[in-house]
Image (cartoon, rainbow, N blue to C red; front, side, top):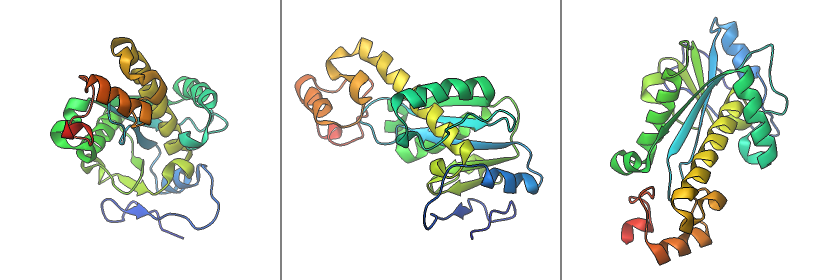
Length: 220
């Protein structure tokens, strides 16, 4: 079993598990056993779309009030995500951060994602002792108090909660953007590169919230 030790090297990473797994509080409990009382789960939404911001969420769950059904947001229905989003906001400490398409174009999506995660953690009301970050990389500002967890949104309840909050928050942003740019159908595809979205770009050209550094827009 991979070790999860606060004394690991910066950016230490928990590898992908073999066999079935589920989101629970195992990783959080191990960290709390090392004296890290406040553990935050960190995840993002919107790395891949052709339009809109990247959104990150940081969530510190209340051990006495854990919403039932927390899991990777991609495995949940829209109704399940929305219901859990409300429950998480009502029961947990939550912070959400966004970085616009323009910033993504300026510093690239990787750097924007890491910066957005860092902003979300810093926006929490209290300083957390340790962070569990979905993926392979801990943001530079969190490397002395963070661990990257591959497939973390399906393994850690805290990361799962963050994945749900980030996904729902971003979907809301893109649905609102559809009011300003109705010709692109953002309320349907949320900025991802679907056939309908690409056809709309071909017909109307990119708009102000498109990512001009992303193909195929950067070719236009």
